[in-house]
Image 1 (tube, rainbow, N blue to C red):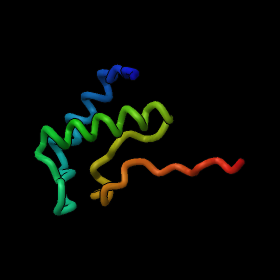
Image 2: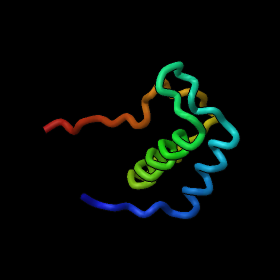
Image 3: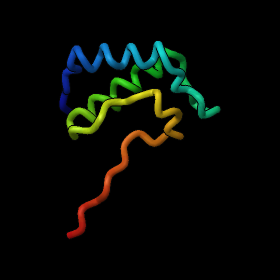
Image 4: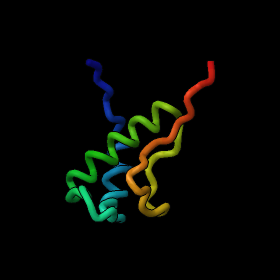
Length: 74
């Protein structure tokens, strides 16, 4: 098990995003605002670790896809 601390700027960004946008538009397992915030924080922390842009609700619904990656070829 490992722990990753949530940076304050990430936490503030995610709170702002959930206040401004509804991330539960899939029609299944949409979650309430608190549950959406938990998911957005988790996704944003991982994106920060991989040096990707944080979650931005302006892009609309992600259809349940948080992060895409390509498996390296051996």
